[in-house]
Length: 186
Image (cartoon, rainbow, N blue to C red):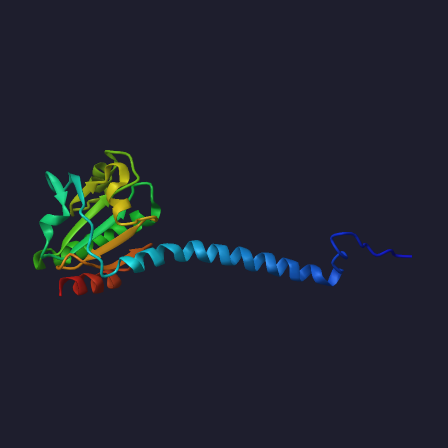
């Protein structure tokens, strides 16, 4: 004769209820993952229309001196946050290079911001990859923090008025970056 369990925790779940428990656990897990995936987008959305923070870093290749965002007021600027160890960053860099070359004569400023990386890695990588747009090293990740960059690659597009037009995390296509560049140059 089967005995039913009754204690202070209540009756044991019936065998038919076990699949629902698995569904509930899967739902909670999916909700947590979705939250982590959406968080960078929510932070980025809050930045749209805001004044771009001041940014300054030493150029490591394709330019000399220091990159100072304030010196580029009146021009559209694309900041490409990347690292040499980041596979998606390396995949996106040729797209950034093509857009930089396409709009260089139109006054678009494109700067690669090497962040979360070892000093010296960016110059060697840029040379080997034949990147020809300026790259600055974000020592201590100060610029990345100022722009709330949490994932790489991240593109920050700044309009001529110094306001953030768009933020893209992950690999951006040539056509999408082209569209954003044209929008920022208006």
